[in-house]
Image (tube, rainbow over all chains, first blue to last red; front, side):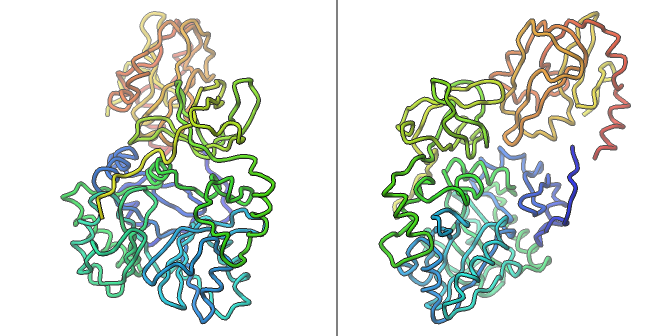
Length: 381
Length: 127
């Protein structure tokens, strides 16, 4: 094991002590000391399968939260966020992104409409400070306040087919009435006015709850959720499973599928980008890019020979020319295949196209497959 | 899990059991615990020449790729092809699931490796 020279100590969530008590393997994620897997849960694969077949729980407090409030809060959000926030009803959330003027990504996020003048932006852990600075600068001309409230909340994700049954034991809010990507405030584990959002990063049904960030509250709530989920086989899940779950669901990870050098069209996030609304940061560049034609696209790959295509590995065509690279790749624990997302030129994006991924010294054959790789079965509403 | 006393160990967490001129090689319980669930093993070919301390293959968990280092020099005489379909056997039985067998060019090289007691001391220092 190498020890890195640290310039600053790793940041910790309120549940850090609890993770260590549970014997979690810890890792540095974007400057945060976070659990990557829990041997007590049986490890990454067991955690992943628990979420797909039962229920799993995650500490996601490292993510950031920005409140935008004021008479021009909506205008401010519309300026910085590419999706159309005017379409949100109170209690509704949607996936979006903050863009640079070049049409590339500052971050992806979930926008929640708390009230007519009140929006909550939930952002990535590794980009919290950058995002907050970006948001403050770009909403300054609107009559609103942008507040960084990330440190006030412990955020716990409860994900899987049994997530609702688990959380229902801990709240009198009727969870069956909360639709996907909607939220309510209610009493959870005795804590009044807790945000309960039907959101997540696993491609399963599930909830994220936001409770006060003091250690005793966080630990108590974690333990109550753990107890409530026991009959469904709940396990604590770390960032390792979080990554394999989101990859199977083709959900973007900042720095991989989206970044400051990737634009919305290349990332395939067109449906979250509402070009028809009034001007927003990045709109001009995106219109230009569309006219010029998109040069590369994110596709799903599956290996058809032995070998695992991993993050950063190069992609070649059958003639041996280097044509792109893998943004994220891994063995998929539920699908039991080796899958990857990769940027390739438009000529190679057709389904069943064959490409080669350089896995160390070997070139491994992969084919382009439909995404998402995994889609959960929906109950009829 | 006990570390067999008749095996020798490397600082890179391989074990080797020598019988005559043949060394049977695997990875330790400590290694499989740190790796987590093993999903892929990249084996050398029978006949490949190995050099003591040099990488000869890889073991992959979901999250990471880990190189395998030759405990001693020699020629690969057998590889465990069962690992192509059941790499997880290394997790369940790390000290009996072998990876390769090597025709040792200089069996005395193994004497310089760690004993079970020395390896156990080494890993308790590491953590």
